[in-house]
Image: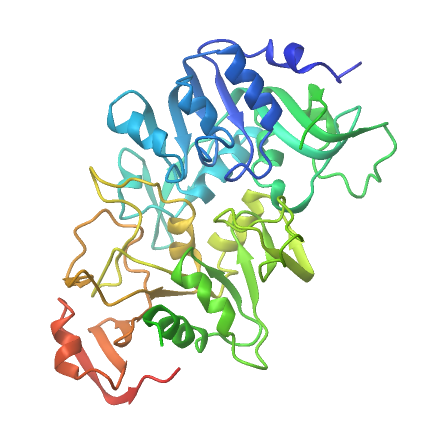
Length: 217
Length: 216
């Protein structure tokens, strides 16, 4: 099975109206080449799940600026003014989620969990519309899992089976999102042969990865 | 001394040897410059590592090693990178000893509002709700008032970041502890009188019997 494909072939799986996840934290560890190709292709009405919308010219926020996103689920939008503008104009449906809850929702989505209980958000607007559960005198919110049609992630060294090693602070949501989508596309800084990576160092097992695109960074 | 630096220096005195510490963006980040001698702390960065070091020298920046504000930083020997679920497991699970954040408003019940002003500014909560809920000790570090308006209130009227989680408020005027009885002024900057501090605070302050001078 050859997972290494061109960017064009990889993003051919992304269609209007789909739900996508994009890894990265303010652009650090985002699949920049794939994002640029999506901007060029112009797929629209996407639901985007990501930590943040980066900056207007860096990271997942480019898709917001290009008005390809209909619905956004993220923890932070403050560094991309365009996201706030579209939200205030009623053009973009934004759900803001505490960052740890978002990470765990993605983890739960990939791990077959029906949800989880967190104390984060109790007593704030985050609890609105959510089931509250008391256990041993503590109040928790029931948070539900998140999944996507396609996850777009970035890896540092990726073998041709899709085993991923990350570098620096780029791991963030990438490893989690790799587990929580029907199709997973990784943009690799370096593609190596199967067996070149010490199995002790692999963070994301290749079974999660469907397509590998080279030329990251 | 600059107000912000004064506040950062006083916050740094709260750090104990071996503490895991998360610093918010802005003033709280300055605390790292004033860790007392002989004290080793481990700075956690919610984007995915422990062992956050100082900014790199010019030309040595690595775009893959950045803090939660996207600024290039370094990682110290013994430091470790991890994913966001692990990062927030550390935070939510009570493994962070101290978190230091700024505030738009804080009140006498320890409620904190620091993530949005409806209709004006909605940046999102980022990791703040998890940090304030999960950290063992929550320190609000901020200037006492904003443009002459109160920030330390009887009751916050902006959307909350978390309810009843703040332990200590450190400003240029003093050090205030949140207790079951209300806000206790524990230390005062000798440049101000108790009356001046109270006038700058909407909530009623309980003056500690052993009120000390704030030293940095």
